[in-house]
Image (cartoon, rainbow, N blue to C red):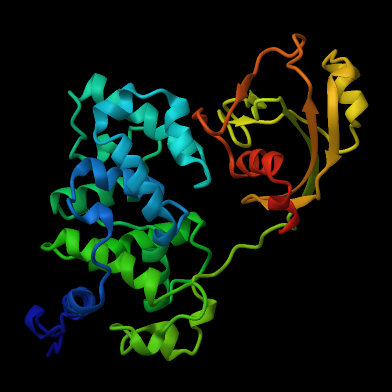
Length: 376
């Protein structure tokens, strides 16, 4: 006689597993939201009022930049460009001027381009569909989701650097986050733990937890609301997650910058190409590290008799994401502006507004007060 079990007698292990996963996801979100209600960051300027435009600007600024650094830039930016229309109509130099020092200037150029597209194609209203938002310059999948979730309280899983770190540690996701396999796993987890309600609060909560508790270095695990279920903490391997991709040694470059000033305190500046380092910004003329002042003057067909004074500033180092740059300044004070110099502008920091990189701003300040460099 057959003893084959009936369908009803077969344990529903798949259904049980799915149910447990759903329960775990709900607990994850519930604990995180409860923590955020007491410990979350409040009073960030883009939260009050939390309009689509303000959220958009803040999310672009927060890419690869900490909130504490962003706050003063955001406040100045929205005070000058209060909505999509004013941003779209603004001159790019005005936009870059207010971005000067924040770095990653392609973000500012993309923000300006996207504003023009929103005015042209979307009647000045930022789209609510994440897929449409992703078509705008500078907006990727996670940024689009963060904008929709925070501005419209619509469920949209995010995966910024903070969320990646929290999820990788809690669920022991191996591999560097930049790999496609790890990305796929993290996106699946982000979708699983994002609750159906309170989208804006949850999005802010997971970003806050990663920024203030589940930090890249010296995480505050004893203060984490997820510590009882964190896989990395249980394995005593918090520092190993997320895995770091092997990076090649950072190359070091050295360039000479010639800071020309006139009797009115203006500096001669040239606009850099749109692509490349400091794209679209203004900077003192740049040359090879070995180029001498005499060679520079000769190449520009400038009469050496115009030089009233000249000095070499101390070399200082500026770090980029993939290399370091040693900046070697030469300060040349001219008795009058040479007619042979063309293609640039004479910039007076007391009255003019230009988009300058942090290095250019430092060189301009040092031209007026050399101690600016000597103190570094």
